[in-house]
Length: 60
Image 1 (cartoon, rainbow, N blue to C red):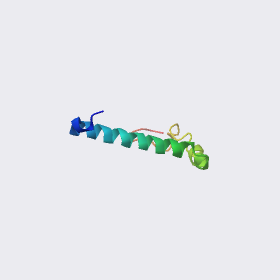
Image 2 (image 1 turned 135 degrees about the horizontal axis):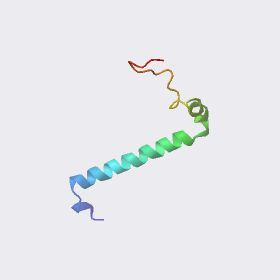
Image 3 (image 1 turned 180 degrees about the horizontal axis):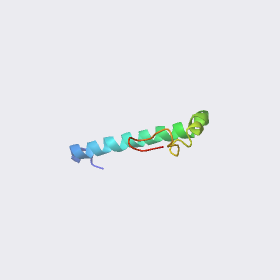
Image 4 (image 1 turned 120 degrees about the vertical axis):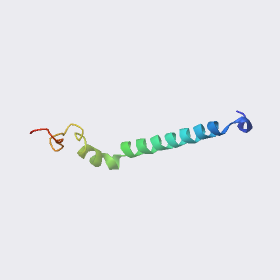
């Protein structure tokens, strides 16, 4: 790898790749940590609960 030959776009790509990797590692750590299990279990069916979110014009 020739660091001196890298352009600005190459460095931006390296930066965003590292940020994405660190972000994904942080999310994986947070999700799979046993201490956070209760918090995530309480929100387990949040995507399926649509009764509280009625959009305008929709009748119940």
